Image 1 (tube, rainbow, N blue to C red):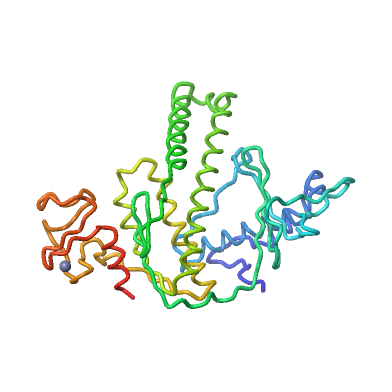
Image 2: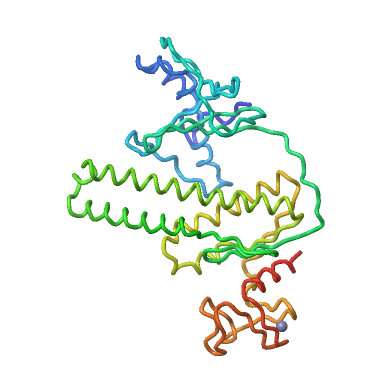
Length: 343
Ligand SMILES: [Zn+2]
């Protein structure tokens, strides 16, 4: 189970265990009050982070980042948490008399094996993330397939459209934009002192609250949609999303909206895995926008359609007009049909 914790001459570095022993031996008095697992899990996480960083087959891993105690999100992990009678029970710290289980709202049907629980504080509230290991059965095969075309503000698939930019999300983007401008203005005017002010702090709290709301709304839309996809289809085609992300350069709050695509692919991919469904990724060279789904003709040069339609042929941004077979199609529906042709 334990490996890779050696000091060798090529990459001399302390092992997770030498660091742990050192820190455990030098615990401060206040640390004895806490569950011993808190320190141990933090060191184990750091060890894994460094191991990933030195893993040459994973070039994307960055160096572990320093976590400031001033950061907005503060947390710890424990592997000793339990669910007792529908309540969350954490390790009782030493020397504490009154210790209560924590009530869990809404979801009462928690089952499976509880894994390492993260507790964190953000925006003055405490959160617990409870990962469960559960046995999953494959979803029944439906004999039906689908494809999803990602667009600015909506997703098209074989039987409809999912709105990914509802009004409440748009409003939150605007407000986040406003707070960010105000805060950066304060920083320019007041310099280093700015971040210490109480009004600055209050506004930053509001900003963080809105970020949390945005994430909740986005996750809700994507979780529901991906569940629907794995329930109803056996094979699902999606395109390489990096191409679409680049086309979004004109969208306000694109960073916030973009993060949704990565999330979409990530959760769809693990849900397909869980439930025995197949996810097909279209190659980023595949001309899902330029191809005619009726005859297979692919537009080139001046015939190509852009987000604004085609200037040469005066077509609208929402249509696909084929100059080979004469078909007039909805641009997004055509893209979905093209993706579906990959199955
Ligand atoms: Zn055609």
